[in-house]
Image 1 (cartoon, rainbow, N blue to C red):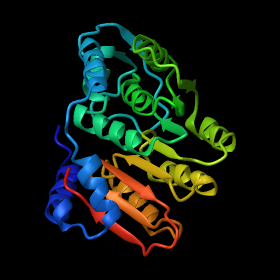
Image 2 (cartoon, rainbow, N blue to C red; image 1 turned 45 degrees about the vertical axis):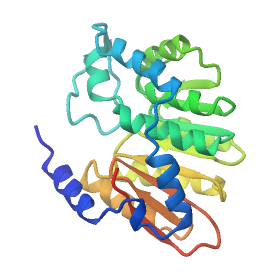
Image 3 (tube, rainbow, N blue to C red; image 1 turned 30 degrees about the vertical axis):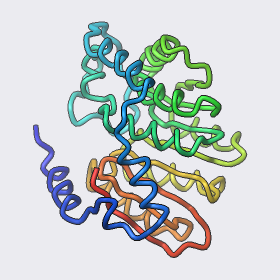
Image 4 (cartoon, one colour; image 1 turned 60 degrees about the horizontal axis):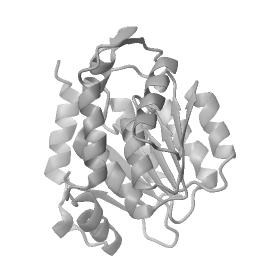
Length: 261
């Protein structure tokens, strides 16, 4: 079933979005030119995409515990891993962009809200091997599969926590001195998204990037994105339709960019 609201939002975005040549901010131009539009193959990509292929044929059935806004595709209690891989994993193009963002920044710490099967987590782990990565997943059986996948790729810098985002996320933030890189891909509701954003604010700094997934997933998510953009601490946002990047660089005039991706 086609999500008409998402389609309309996508058309509006494409009409307004620019490429690198329409960007007048040196920081954003460099980000677009050397990170967002860097489509060169990398060895890490091949290894992780082989894992994706195996997940797309995995018929093992697991029980789903969904504490968020559910799925537009399939919200049954039992799902095969191959169905999750098909419908819930980030597409290759987007997962590899998140890899490049982390690889470019080389953050000291990464928090991921929404581990799923661990594919994007694997991209983050390979992109920033010296980072301390904490990934939070609400579904215990999904988290177990993610841990197995991370072990297959021999990652050693990821800790997967299981439980309610609203309880675990604030604890992880409290235990982190300053937030470098946060990828929020869970509980796609306006109120929850704004709560996660606000919880981060006390620990952001000049080099922090917050990445919000599915910012056009629903009317509520669009409203949340607009509120985030307008917050006084936010100096710069990059709207790639599928995800939104939020920066807190002090001394900059507030700017918002829509980029074709």
